[in-house]
Image (cartoon, rainbow, N blue to C red; front, top):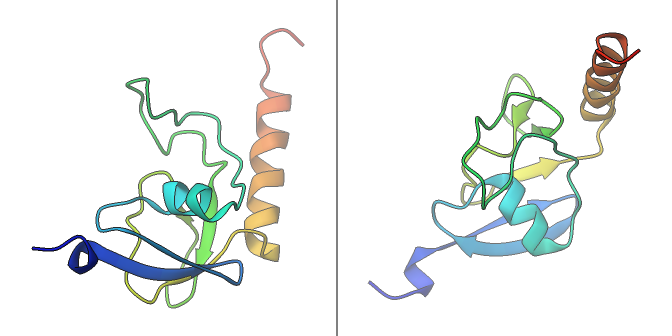
Length: 104
């Protein structure tokens, strides 16, 4: 199978990007130059991704926000990283972290 056959195209914040099948939305966003805040995901460190919930994004056709660090990119997908819902979710995560910080 050729490399082109393994490519999918999606739109993230109005930027069309082509990535290899199996790429997460977070990786696709980074490839497109779109910054998605995240705490618990790092490609070089074994971790438990999707725990922090900072990378939640809105995907058209999905009923709820999805963690971009584990959600696979799909052909024709339209993703919004700065929608009102995504921004509100990130704000809630930050507030939770600040309220529960052990050194406060």
